[in-house]
Length: 392
Ligand SMILES: NC(=O)c1ccc[n+]([C@@H]2O[C@H](COP(=O)([O-])OP(=O)(O)OC[C@H]3O[C@@H](n4cnc5c(N)ncnc54)[C@H](O)[C@@H]3O)[C@@H](O)[C@H]2O)c1
Image (cartoon, rainbow, N blue to C red; front, side):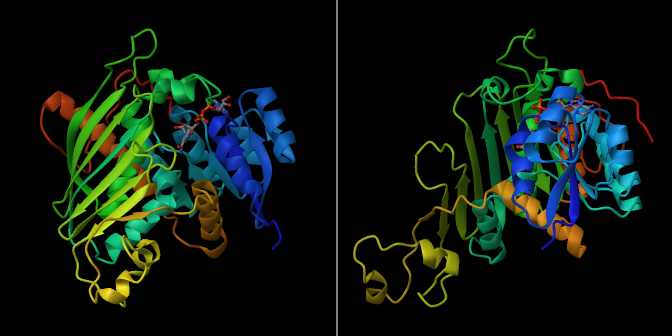
């Protein structure tokens, strides 16, 4: 296939370098055409390293003149709104890194601009593209854990892990730009993942996001976020994220009336075991056991165990999904398929905006001391955040 889709990357920092440039590079249907970074050396170096024909330092010029079909926006959070809206008005398809924006109004502006201009908008919630999370989704939809009523997602990761070793700039520590941390940086992943796995919109949320571990001189952003979401079908989900635990720990637990699914990061899970486990109390025989469980359910005692028992015994099934193609490769492949074949992206702009509403509602709940209903009727500006003037 010819490399027909001309891609651009806006913000050539850490996530572009780790994830987006390599994933575009591995695609046969797309090529990196142009890049933009406010830092001249960074833009020029990225273009040279990843083979882009053009590079820019001003995002307006880049979006107006480069001739790209699609852009990945990987700049600090406060820029996403104006950048994505301008891309849409130039009829450029858009992936915006999470969080899609900082305030709920910023997020819905992006959604509206992309819908009005008929361009594909996807939010970079890569957790949905991890194989074990996709398997969990499939097993939930097949009904093997019954009714999903209670779920939780946590993502704990010390500031230093990423900030001191990977990030190119300190924007995450500046709340005027980032607008939050545990609630909207790592929280963006956890909220999105639970909402998607539940297959439900959030009806209301309540919680806290505050700075507990770091001194104010380091950052004014929150480093601890805990929230409860009630979904439209009445199911409950909790999210907990912190930015002070040195051990990265991402766990998702999905409790249904007939079973439970756990997924963890493959990087670190405290038991150093497979990153996924499934239990179902449904009565299966070897013939009708879902294929995923059949493939991973090794005998415990004897290799002809399944011949000895007509019914499959209920027990935890540990699963170890393949690591490759990785989440970003799968995400980029999916997004290009959406552009080329006119499909709806898996993580829609509306999904991204609803996640921002959950974050904003949670912040508001700290003021009111009660549940906050969605959709929000007012713009919530997180503490210390200084929105950029809106460009139209
Ligand atoms: N999906 C994930 O897991 C994940 C991981 C990391 C970052 N992110 C998101 O990606 C975005 C970028 O984060 P990062 O870690 O790559 O940051 P970073 O600090 O490493 O890089 C940001 C880059 O953007 C450039 N930049 C800043 N302002 C700009 C502007 N106005 N125009 C053009 N370039 C500009 C900087 O010079 C820098 O090179 C954030 O929204 C972040 O939340 C997502």
